[in-house]
Length: 202
Ligand SMILES: Cc1cc2nc3c(=O)[nH]c(=O)nc-3n(C[C@H](O)[C@H](O)[C@H](O)COP(=O)(O)O)c2cc1C
Image 1 (cartoon, rainbow, N blue to C red):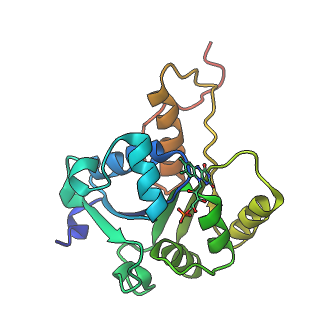
Image 2: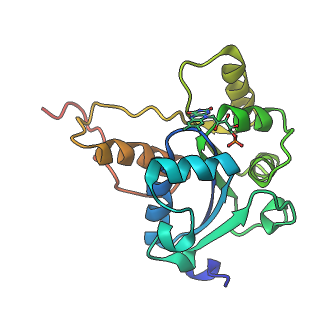
């Protein structure tokens, strides 16, 4: 069912095999709950790490109470509508890869990927859409850093999974909300997921 016309907008979420699946889970739930259409593509390792780390199955029913807003795509299917620049649902495509493994990062940086996630990222860059990449690895080597720089120079937003602590988070949920809020900001999605810094708050 095409629900685009009834939604606030359309976001593609790519999930790869880096640690930090909880960010993807919180983001997808927030977007679906807030009336966005969410297209999800996971790599094979992305799906396995997601299910291992979150204990949640990567299926529309398990991910959200609004499964009608969620569309799961097969990462091997290059015949997906998401593969083409002509598939434009908003004025500008919005794609986030969260969490992003160093493997997917490298393939995106060299436009050499053969899976749907890398193709969607490539399309977003060539069409001057918004591509937000949330890499997770530590420590980083020079290849990782060079790949991030290449993608940034090509128009991507590099948004490392590096939560801040100046908001004095009390729970893991606070830390996750901080990161998800940063991702939503980068996607131009208005949100109030965490209290914004407003000078020294005493
Ligand atoms: C539990 C687990 C955690 C991992 N965490 C990371 C990580 O944080 N960053 C990373 O680059 N790779 C990580 N990996 C390795 C990637 O999953 C691996 O490089 C994989 O080939 C990435 O494939 P993909 O890019 O197609 O998802 C992790 C693997 C496992 C099993």
